[in-house]
Length: 223
Image 1: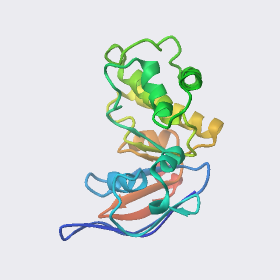
Image 2 (image 1 turned 90 degrees about the horizontal axis):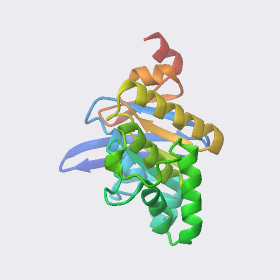
Image 3 (image 1 turned 30 degrees about the vertical axis):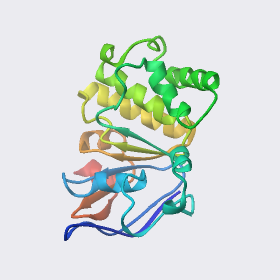
Image 4 (image 1 turned 60 degrees about the vertical axis):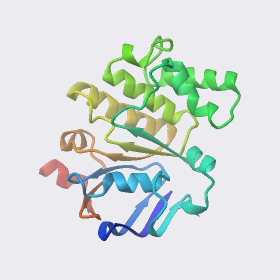
């Protein structure tokens, strides 16, 4: 599903990612942890095509990421962020529908699908609300519905619970796991929270100094 070989990125003499190797299988849920500045967000920015200047090879479903047209990359991968990135002047439904509209899908079909996913993430009845009327947890649920609208096989989650309290963070993690199971979505989630990883353990990668090390779930539980 995701294959990374020899990924190296340098900025002005500083090496941010060092000969990085990574493989994610279809349907996996993988955590990515590490200190600030270790390269976690840089890796996600490579995967979602925000960074295109790098050494090494990145493949998505066996195809070189560099050769994928941008619209196709958007169909294959979606990203959710710590800051939600909703448009203030648009309603919840309009924010979610935007993900389909930018790909040229039929507006009526997009709105129907947007309502379906809002129901799936527990946001039914909030379709006409604006972001300022939502709690942090509700904004992140809206962002997740938008990310999944086009049913991408891969979801990149960059600190999706970072701005949430403990209760809402747990609910969002449970939602991501539920979607992983029901939709078969491959999830790569960056998180600083060891507590969340302990609550729902899975394969965990630790990044430090631009390199990756695997950490088994049993090590997390015993630490």
